Length: 110
Image 1: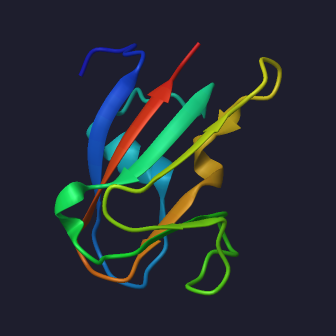
Image 2: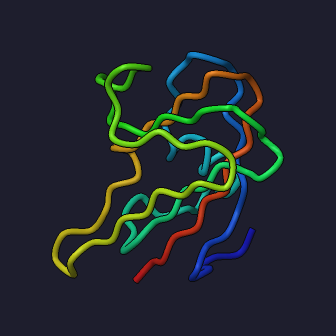
């Protein structure tokens, strides 16, 4: 896949229920050249996921009771950065309460 795309717009699947997965690992499987640092990011649970819940948090601390955001279908979590402090995708983990949960990801690179 040729890069850079900006915005980068793709969908990833959280494979297993109640298991943390690193966002960068999911993205890198789609595009080996995906950047690790981005200027802004948006994560949305796919419209067809019904009542599935997706938890967004940090590595080593994300759980069903400890998270930064919890999303259901069509809900979105977004964050941006200042020019000198980019968002490190390896610091974002996802967790779903159902298996094969589809999540839409978009981000802007510099």
